[in-house]
Length: 153
Ligand code: AMP
Image (tube, rainbow, N blue to C red; front, side, top):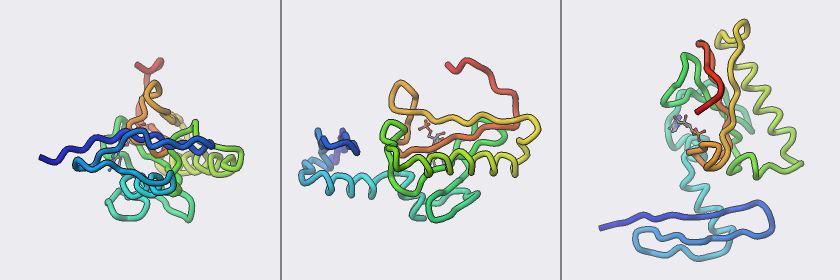
């Protein structure tokens, strides 16, 4: 039987660790760069960004991709991602400030184009386990088209 147990911790900070990775019974070893390449090959949103997995695309440019969420939680629910792999908000650096701003502004533009200008929308970025992040590739949710409750669960 083939088992897949993956527990990788990648950081953009100086200490980069591959804590454990067993793929089909084979341990992944190698440099941090190898591990990053491995993650980018495997990451769901990296694969969507490369066109290897289909999505309902709303917008694309050199840096960004926006697509409808596969399990929408509101009449309007789309994601904006950087094409470059960034795990989560905690991994953003000062040099990413413009990219981070573009993600938010693009979400606003698209939400307007999808009819959310008058009543607004919610723009959410979940981060790591406490934040409820399930896909480890930075993404901003835009939800609109219905009244959303607060506080979140
Ligand atoms: P989060 O829980 O913040 O990490 O959000 C991940 C989001 O990605 C969820 O809302 C999922 O429904 C969505 N999602 C997962 N796989 C896909 C996919 N293949 N295409 C579009 N959205 C996806």
